[in-house]
Image (tube, rainbow, N blue to C red):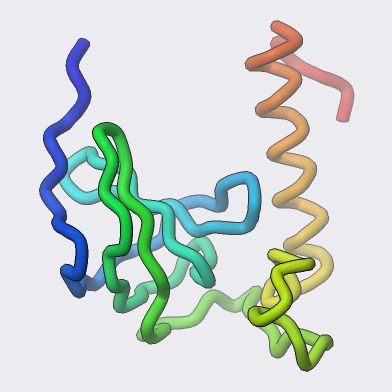
Length: 120
């Protein structure tokens, strides 16, 4: 099975619908089946993105503007959030953070541990 050809180029500015949250707090969107990881975006959001890096199987971009925010988006409690790099989900409400982390643990246990229904 071949990977989708990159429909994006470095520097492109596009509008994306964020469908999921990747490990590390990046939003996940798709363009014609091609995965785009977006720093600063949350599931359920419509965002304007500048594409940074384009690889064979995915692209990475930065959120320039949130056009339609997630209902789970909050103002980060730390004034250094986004600058120091120590935290990656402070813009997501605590209950949504817990649910996102729970889903990531389940996905990892399924993929790495081979468990169909991990008790998480």
